[in-house]
Image 1 (cartoon, helix red, strand yellow):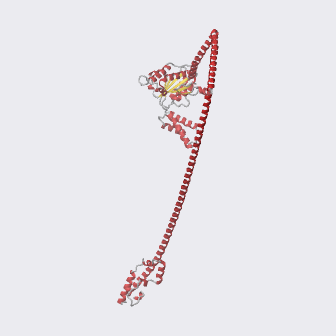
Image 2 (cartoon, rainbow, N blue to C red):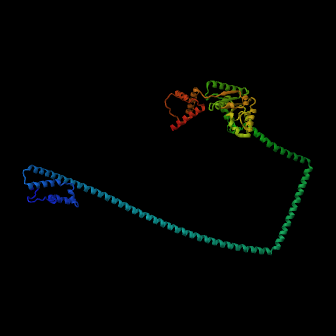
Image 3 (cartoon, rainbow, N blue to C red):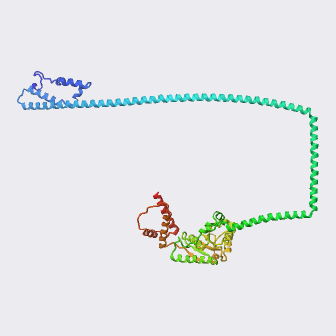
Amino acid sequence: MSWLFGWGRGSTKPPTDEAETPEGEGGSSDKSFGEKPKDKWSNFDPTGLERAAKSARELDRSRSYNSYHIVMSFVKASCSLSEEYEAALEQLKGEQIRLQAEERRKTLTEETKQNQARAQYQDKLARQRYDDQVRQQQALNEENLRKQEESVTKQEAMRKATIEHEMALRHKNELLRVEAESAARAKVERENADLIREQIRLKAAEHRQTVLESIRTAGAVFGEGFHAFVSDWDKLTATVAGFTLLAVGVYSARNATGVIGRYIEARLGKPSLVRETSRITVGEAIKHPTTKRLRSRPQDALEGVVLSPSLEERVRDIAIATRNTRQNKGLYRNILMYGPPGTGKTLFAKKLALHSGMDYAIMTGGDVAPMGRDGVTAMHKVFDWASTSQRGLLLFVDEADAFLRKRSTETISEDLRSTLNAFLYRTGEQSNKFMLVLASNQPEQFDWAINDRIDEIVNFALPGLEERERLMYFSTNDCSDETIVRMKLAQFDYGQKCSNIAIRAEGMSGREISKLGVAWQVSTCDLSS
């Protein structure tokens, strides 16, 4: 079977790898792979060929040609192994090409990195050279600046030394000049001492004679005038009367000025306890003496005031009675209004005064206690000022329970007690000059004497559902009327919305509902802007 593998019959040794490898393939492989010629056999398994060769040798030795089918199977195996060998060679070539491309790519990548590193290193060196140049230039500039400063310092020192030397020389020359002048002057005075003494003696004698003559002349003139004045009784009487009239005039003018000032203050000045008033003050009288008076027209007492029907009927009767009282110049009735804050007590008092054609003044009970011992004087000034009103004055005392507390049970100071007594004294009788309106949240704390001063008691309760709806309507209308920028509102049932909000606003006062409308206006302006 040696013919199967191309061996000689006499040869029993299988060929080596060099003999089995074709010359063309081996040469091309050596040329292709350069330094790695043995890599082409790395994936080839020669065990199959070895087994085939071993079987062939055994058959050759046995000389048994009866096993032909065994030989043919070995031939087929050898053919398949040859095909596998060629496929392995092709695969090995492709793998080598891929490895070469990979090596080439890695080489290019490494060269790129090396170039970048070289460029960065060169840039770093350039920057270092530039920084060194900058530092050297800066050091050179600093050195030049230091030298210039040293030069300027030396020049300044030299100039200063020169000036000091010149001043020393000038001072020395001045001393020498003064010394020479003093010596010359002393020498002249020593030589002319007799003449100087004679000159001084003559001047003193002349001055003394002049003074004596002046005294004699003045004494003679005053003596003759006084003698003539005393001898003439008419002149003496007229002089005494003139001095007397002058003293009386000065004293009278000083006291009359104080009286007139207090009178003007009582008429036109606003007392310190009054916080707000519709009465014309001195400044307003000077600015526009008739405008404010013409503008204060009588108004409806309940205009803009939302109250329950029963309370509205009662306060309207009070407003009509007050207006008729003023027209008939009768005695005003004092009113006590009590209720929670923000229910319209102060607003109704202002409307009542304007409806009746009266002036109004608002004072707060909390301002009385801090005044101490001056509270009595301030209280009298308030009532004196109120009594001077020609139209009648509505005196509204807000938070009156702050100083009108019970004297028997409450612990109050002596000053506050004196102020309370002054208030009771000035309100002991009805007046046709002023009307007293008290407002309080706790009327049960009033002194028992206050009850005698009150003619009407009005309870301002929290608004009901109907009143809250009206307040909602007025608040939103006022906000929309006062808005300068026209706003576009959504389409909805306005009345139903006010009713729903009024139901949810149960327990709120009129002031709180008004502030709610102001909050809506502010929110709308923020959104529109």
